[in-house]
Image (tube, rainbow, N blue to C red):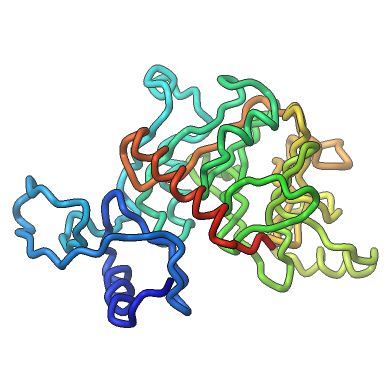
Length: 315
């Protein structure tokens, strides 16, 4: 199924102007116009930009100033306890959420956060995590270690057990809470360069950012050319983030996929030869364009059905 050229042009113009639609979303390839999810097209609707109470039909595409994408929009947090939010018991704070959204694909930068999994709430099990996020597409993993380090990853492909096969999108990135500013983040986007080992999960571990088989000399040359590698990094190439099956511990290393350093702080790495860490909590948040849990889960299930039946390539 492809969009007619006039509709493709209309959609491109709408995206460039920051236009959003409610409830109905379209997944499409901007290069060939292939549509992976149905969208109901509506006519452009003339609205009064001064009328803040205007009610819109969810089948319309509309143009209004207060609906344009803004990275400064405070995200709505769904699926989380109001008490825990008030007491600051989640790894991701609102400022961190806003900072992370600014690095996401343009179509996601106004999305809200839906808590799908929390280790302290749902238990320490990789199988439980996978079942909770099965229908989610774009997700943020947040990890807090027993030493107080906070880091994680954004991925835009559903988490599926394909054994030892890597897959994923170049929209993905690793992140860590800045050591200089608790509300800031250091972000490491996909580095291209032919390294496509972005995400992988099986019954034994979950991995973001793989490593290639290189000789010691090649590894040393790569590490020396990685300007983002800090002095506290061990220099050994490996997984960007790896978690074991019971989610009790994991590791982080210099990673060629994202040209990222070990994500642990210098204090946590002191005296260690590797970037092994012990987990205090893990959260997985799904990005959603809705502000209602029921609507978000409905949309997730629809996208999941299309992902499973549309012949996606997983590598």
